[in-house]
Image (cartoon, rainbow, N blue to C red):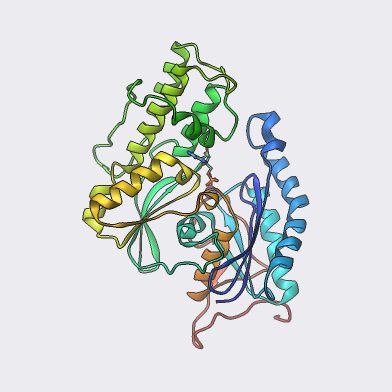
Length: 364
Ligand code: KG4
Ligand code: ZN
């Protein structure tokens, strides 16, 4: 596969990577905007776009310097995400591809998360993805189970309300903990008693593979208010807070993994994966590995640093899409705020010669 420059600007992280033809990560650059948004208590879209605009050219320059050869393909997240933030990445990537006369591939952010378990941070080639992968994606915006079969993801279950990561963030916010909440909850919950607070784990009767986090989150917030823990912060965490976090974390992990055994039985996957920011969670990783052992199915998890948003995963998804014959027109590629497996402007050209048609400089 071609050496790929990848650009990801869907939210509050500017990320650029270069992947060798075998999916080996040659460069993986990240500029986090957390400090810029912190005073506002959440991501300010206009500020995000401006930060991407400043950071992106510098990161691309650094990544290209680290590449072990010329860039032959450009992959960029076209959605879903903040539209202004996405546009910065899309227009930059399109201009880069056009100027160098190399093909451009639009990538769906979720597709990136789905391929991230197959990447290595140790300088190894990407692991080939077998057919029939049962994949959990749990991030700040999504919580779903997919079956990847015949080259396409099919959604088998989803959250009916909040995403898992969002529920971590909201409970952390109510306690006065820093954003994003997931990492700090993960760290503190290690010291708590997960049986202290009984939290609801609703089952959706007509869709047993679906889950809900909103009631769980609200019950946790009610409990912390009743126990005078609102806004206490991270300085000197009281035992009740640490117990609540352990109980909450266990309930979220239980919810996410509840459908797994039935999905394995019904779909007979070759592998189980998890990705997205919540896949960094220590308890989720432990439980998933244990479940895999019990069910006799291998569990493949991304390196922790590749669970949250990064460009390497976008590069790998772009390489796989390119190998399947997809290419985007740099003059027409647009960003989109919502999720779509085939972002706008992406075409599948007829594959006569077995390689994708190039769209770039010199084309009419
Ligand atoms: O994938 P990601 O970087 O961005 C989205 O596409 O949403 O995921 C970010 C989410 C945040 O909600 C964050 O709190 C959560 O992932 N997260 C975690 C952990 N690390 C990040 N949640 C639980 N445990 C963690 N260790
Ligand atoms: Zn993400």
